[in-house]
Length: 166
Image 1 (cartoon, rainbow, N blue to C red):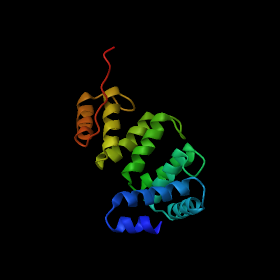
Image 2 (cartoon, rainbow, N blue to C red):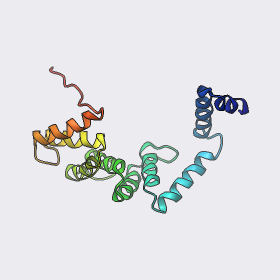
Image 3 (tube, rainbow, N blue to C red):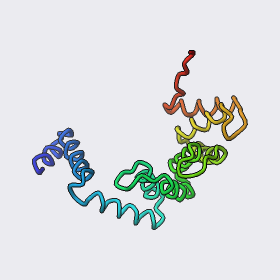
Image 4 (cartoon, helix red, strand yellow):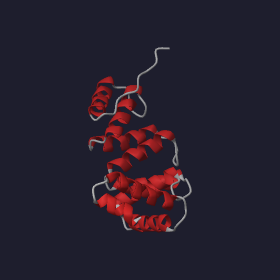
């Protein structure tokens, strides 16, 4: 391992990538307790009100990464981060409301969260908000607003998928 670290310092970045990925793989495989320690530290920061930690803990519960998959628990942590204005948490909370994952499906509530994240410039939220206006999901159908939000998302690289003519 020291040889890999020395190679990384010498400018061989591939060695650094292998070094880092190897560390993550061993942590994720359960070979050591560092993953659990990391999750414990993350949860402690989240409980202290750190919005980024709350968001990341929400992701962990949503994905089942190191914890049992639990959408209701993910929503709990996303909501706390979203209340502090974290755009990514607002967007993810909107997705959960739209899909009815961990909460009852509520498209109007989804749009509320998409709108807050979109106003901060988050491209995925802009796309989802534009799509809601385009389809009249949670808001009245409004093609002008749909075009505006979808254009803003597209300008950041999030484009509407092509529709089949079949």
